[in-house]
Length: 209
Ligand SMILES: CC(C)(COP(=O)(O)OP(=O)(O)OC[C@H]1O[C@@H](n2cnc3c(N)ncnc32)[C@H](O)[C@@H]1OP(=O)(O)O)[C@@H](O)C(=O)NCCC(=O)NCCS
Image 1 (cartoon, rainbow, N blue to C red):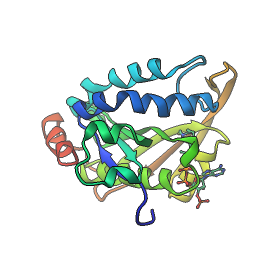
Image 2: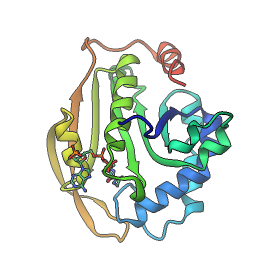
Image 3: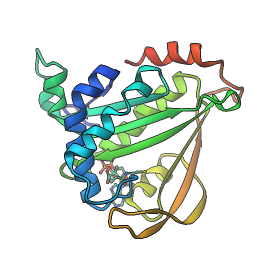
Image 4: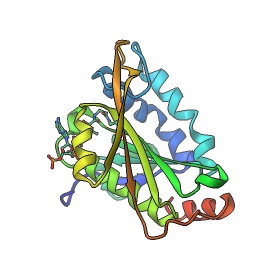
């Protein structure tokens, strides 16, 4: 990202709740644009905000990490969470696996950029932030899925992700039409050993708040 570009912040559960309405504006914009992110039309801003609010418990207990990108104006001195919330133009999440044999693994989720802010490197910056935080939390394998043929595919390929395969008719777009999904993975960090249990994971995650 160039200097003066959006500031990316990892949200606490409280900040997520405070930002839910504006994250909802972002999510509704992306779904309205036809992206297959798990929702069907009609999907308005309030429904989207409710969906974000429902994630607060998972953020609070460290199972989920969510970053929000705020536009330039939120760098002003004296800004607060409510002010930041009005300027959310992108987001990405990491879902940690709590199965004992899968704690080295995590999933990139809900990477999206507002339609008015695309093509400026924000998704690449959000993805890099999430990957770095996952690596620092001890994750050595990241996975994700994305609609086959979507613009996001070239972002992942050029970012060192490997395609594992394509599943036909995996998910419906907002209009209800089924599309294939491509599965990707990326090895990150150094060790391929299993990560320690949840208590240590939670303390690690807390450093990025
Ligand atoms: C996919 C998305 C996140 C990209 O956001 P963005 O901020 O515009 O992306 P960036 O500017 O960081 O671009 C990074 C790379 O993505 C790819 N890319 C982005 N937009 C693209 C487009 N319209 N067509 C083809 N490739 C595209 C390119 O490889 C680009 O790298 P380059 O600029 O070096 O060519 C955004 O279009 C979006 O939110 N789409 C809807 C939601 C979605 O599909 N999310 C992915 C879910 S897995």
